[in-house]
Amino acid sequence: MPDAIVIGAGHNGLVCACYLARAGLDVLVLEQADEAGGGSRTVETVPGYRFDTHSVAHNIINMTDIPAELDLAGAGLEYRQMDPFAVSVRGDGRIVRFHRDVDATVASLAETAPHDAFAYAGFMERALPVIDAVMLGIDAGAGPRRALSQLPSRARGALLALTRNGGPTGLARLLVAPYARLLAEHLHSDVARAPVAAFAAHSSASPAQTGSSMYSLWQAAYHRFGQWHAVGGAQGLVDALVTRLESYGGRVRTSANVQRIVREAGRVRGVSLDSGEQLGAPVVVSAIDPRSALLELLDPPLVGAVADELRATHRGNAVQMLVHVATTALPAYPAGRPGDWNGLQSHVNGLDDLVAGFAAAEARRLPPDPVPTYAFTTSALDDTLAPAGHHTVYLACPSAPFDLEGGWSTQADGFAERMLDVVEARAPGFRDTIVGTSVRTPEQMAAELRWPGAHPMVLDITIDQLAWLRPTQSLSRYHTPVRGLFLSGAGTAPTGGVAGSPGRGAAKAVLRRHGTPP
Image (cartoon, rainbow, N blue to C red; front, side, top):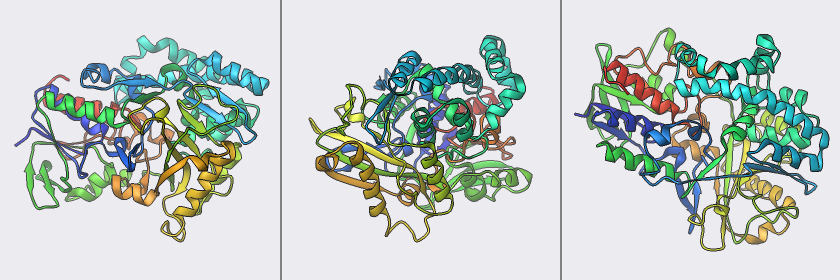
């Protein structure tokens, strides 16, 4: 019998398992799919061309010391910086480049919108110390006490966050505002507003959502820490984690679908697979959606106030629709310069286009034209993803409805064509370079990745579901009311995305409970 079972071999589940195994526990990871990775897999969805299933650019995990602590480079992980981390390709052909260096970004904005260049510099001056303060929670794990214990070493950043944003009242207002309002107040035109909003929207957050400002403030994190591509695709991170786990003595078992989390007399006893096989363990860590784990898989399910609080968590209907496009060339933007294909390429002209797209999704409709889209062309940095001289274009709409009136089966192809039209308008001749496509609807991603609602962050990342409030205040320390049952994954503290912090935080919670230092 293993010491611990981890449900889900996404990157957070694997990070958790690595830390547990490194501490000497016998760890078994169970994954329902035929390969580890979850939303961080890289798959040949078009013959000969490999695309990420979801996560493409890795920022948060490179803000932590997890890769160094687990020596993931020694396990084969190689990251390449995406700089510029993003460009905005406007409908009139103009391109604004967002470099890791703020001054270089300001200079690019000045070529097109001098007033916005000055405003952007001021916005980053206010946002950067907020990000530095946020790192308290990401580094320390869940819980305000642990974050506050690091305050002396981070005092300057926290103080700057207050002083540059009008004191406690001003900072509070900044954090609860919808990011559409925040950008409208701090930037002058859509030349700057639209791309920053588009970068924020790729996490499926509506610009009009109260408490969503952190998405746009996160722009500063790209400047502070950079944006990174794993060679071989996101799978490079997964493969390194599996290699490291196995070096510690842990195991991953694929095609193992957990049907029940078994508990008796107030404590966890193990899991039951859909095959009927019973696997016992004194510790179970669920690295999947916390609602599914505690309200559906747990037998008997959680009830009472903690369950009610979890049931009240929210995720919107706006998620991502993907089109994987295999091409013979990169999109030929007329004003393109070397490096413009390194990072995210926004095809959004106006902030209002995003607002309209998200409003349509919440009403179960497709976004109106112009469809908000963005692209990643990671083959420009990584020749392992496509045949020599060819490329991968990962095209996404961040405001597609999961629950679509009339269903996706009859509307997916037409919507994909509208997304391709957006690129063609900015890169004439793009359609002539296409050799194959794979359309990935929200319904498909929900089924393949086991993501309820196809939400990439599991739950919305709003001020009431972030850090020590994620997924809820009662469950943010990774413990559950069931002894031996712990939570991890994107729906737990401190945040979603490719972070690893929820995995490490859950492992520390397990090891503290077992009296073993992390």
